[in-house]
Image (cartoon, rainbow, N blue to C red; front, side, top):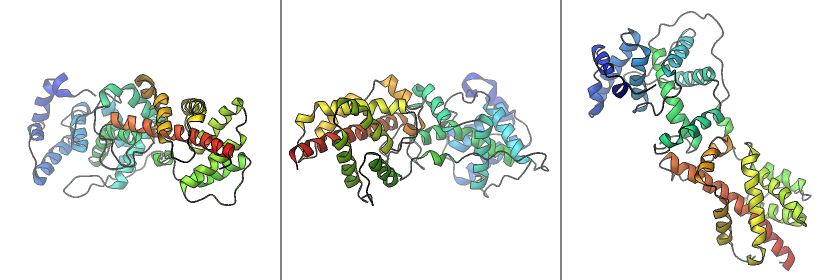
Length: 357
């Protein structure tokens, strides 16, 4: 959906004729003025004084504070109307008084209806983000929720059409049920990795022939156990790939192994070349930095990483990323550093075993 003021000169006249003061967007509105603007927009929906194509940009700006970021989905007004009509056939949309914000339950229902209508998956949404990266990369990360590429994609791509849907729904009369309720979709939070490392570590140690009764609660201690177990079985060059696969498994990486396995394999090869430079009594972070610098791909390949949901759900815990571009580099930095450090730890343990320390 293109932004009408530039592509359709008649849009502003039609909106004004419907009673919507679009000039107010450019002023500082108090709560009362914002509520009055919301009322005129929602009345235009209820009374059908504007087409879905004309009212959609108003609803998006009312909900997100800005215009649609890109032309996606291409038939966004129709998608929003179709899903709102389906929802209205089964329930009334609840809005909070005065603010005209949908209740959490209504918002969830609208989001699920949009996702189901578009057949959308996290990977699919991330692919759209990658396809339009040049336009979207400079935009700001959402202030609330998780700081990931997937949360950004939801914020700039999915939420505009969800907001339009839920407000159209709020203005539709609730009819009697005339078919199955809109399909419920799997919560996307299920794509986050979660804190699985204790069980994953225990399974991997057993696979390496070093079973333990209890995995240490301290992550660094568990990492050292893994590194020692890997070093113990690393006898020939042929086993480098096997240890790389072990590293990938302990990252709890459910995404495409074609992305991360070559990284881990390359990290193992680079770490092996630095075996004689390792000082087993210090952190050796400078060596990990060197390995990481050789793992980072050129920009066009890095953008393609976005398509993998495992990469797209890497968290920026400190929330240093202000824009999508910064989030992409933060995720790549975390991934390549983790792989580089895990590979180097194997050879640190190998050096310690050689010296009997």
